[in-house]
Length: 528
Picture 1 (cartoon, one colour):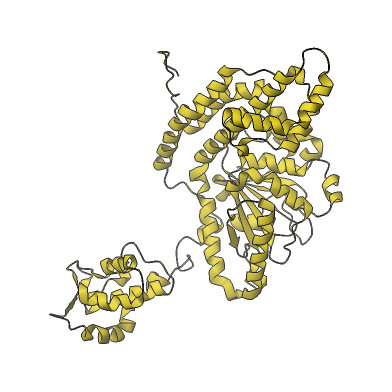
Picture 2 (picture 1 turned 45 degrees about the horizontal axis):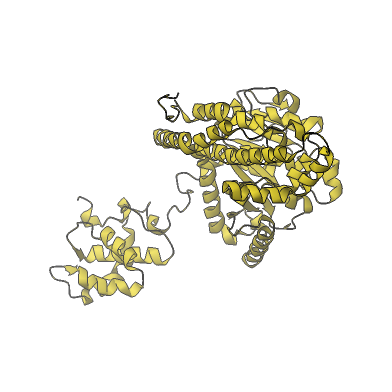
């Protein structure tokens, strides 16, 4: 809604999803349609793109464990699943939630308005025959959907024999998913030509990319360090960004570890990856908002490019020659638009791809600049997005517990097999005896050298001993607050022993608790 009193008020929205749909339809789509954005950059968005659950896209060379990874997350086989050492998954499989277990073929999928795949129709039958949706009831799939992809092969011949543009299909998915996971096998680190091309096609989506170095339990620690270094070096050459993509190391299946040396590392890495995936439903609205902003910026630049080309074209003669000249000099047009409209070079579409598509276009059908359309998009970016951003935060606050449940995510939550259980500050959690009592005789010897008064040492005396740990004052200050259980500004023998226990916990590389756990409270203070 708008107030027509000379100045537009931002739109009022019921929820984020409805707001995104309305903004896209009323403000961004008219600009995209006028300047044929859908022929050049990306098909039009549909309601299902804004309503669908978060999606995770798995990409990797054959036999890196993509399908096994999905099986590990869900703890259940899915329809159409094939696992083997050779290229077994020859299709794109969208693993989604459904009441009945079954497979939906690609041609049926792209006519279903409730699924976000209708625009994949453009890739033709060669692709649609290799695209299915596996539906099944599963707790994990109630929160996310997972896209399994064919194993990437090496050699030019394989790329051509697919019959469709594999990299373009992956790019289409990359625009719409919430997380892209690149899987590598610790034994086969060679990145094939097709895989390099795929990673470059995903270049504008580095924020969604995570890397998994799988099957890492099959090699020892020293070899793993070398493999990890080689992977980072290879990725740095292809991705070409100064930021390092987050790499998770582990063995993502439910089999015993072959080389258990790095078990703790694998547990910590798996926990971090699970947390990342579990946060997707909570951040889904923000991701869709972010993607719409990216799309709007690209659509604006595209409109400037198309209208510039139209402006340069002659009305009567020499159109073909002028068209060839404009395509050849497209880089100069980019530079001019960049300076004229103060646009970042990173917002421009890829030059080579744009030149290739322009060669088959009729420039006479292009539109000149229409300021009203551009103003509507600018207004959307400046005002409406800020309004939606507030709504995103409100929705997140209203649903704080929204995270992926079920499957492998349940096994790491609670109980003795939860990550870090019984370690660090959690040591002794199941024991009847106070865990600090084990080393208390040693701590008592130090305590009585500090000349306690009425059975207690002052902060100044305790500090002299505590700084010997060489921990920073900020950490020692936190340890003091946790150890001074009765908050009297002094430490008795039990509290002093507790402070030394917490120093040991920190020196062993564990985090300190925010509040003192019950099992660490000194026995004489448990009634406080």
